[in-house]
Length: 114
Length: 114
Image (cartoon, rainbow over all chains, first blue to last red; front, top):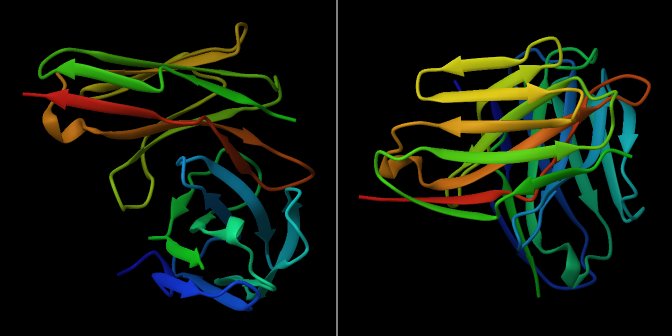
């Protein structure tokens, strides 16, 4: 009964490659998010989608392109990977978009760029 | 935009003592303040949250207080146990147009020694 799931769990790749991370939630939530946690454990919002529409893009390089094929999925594609992209990427979801809804996090994808 | 400051960055207590973590936020429009606990290699887990129409909330050994005028909120853990050892994050909601995303503090590493 996994609520928010992500694949893959680990991703090791070379600089310059393109990679994707997938996220799915089975909670029936309307809003999904991507957060980045860097090596100092700092959690930062990247994107927010509500009903498949982008509503937040927090100054993320355009090498990062989220895609939401439906409400239950929010995938993250990263082009031309750089060393600084190494981090843990967390997907999250919440019910509705009126503010104050609890966000549930996925298990994270640990990306290492060599 | 919203900024969340969290103190202290590390906190060491003896089992049975109380622990207090404090956060301040900058955007008076923020109306939702969750606290997350993150164990090593795991996802952030919500432990308690408070909304702006409430001054205090308690759940067993955990309590959160909110002072909207001063724009600060605090987490109180009583009768600490070794399993409380983790990184704790405070967060404040931002709400551009629609949807909710969280701005996180930089985390507090709590160590409880027995």
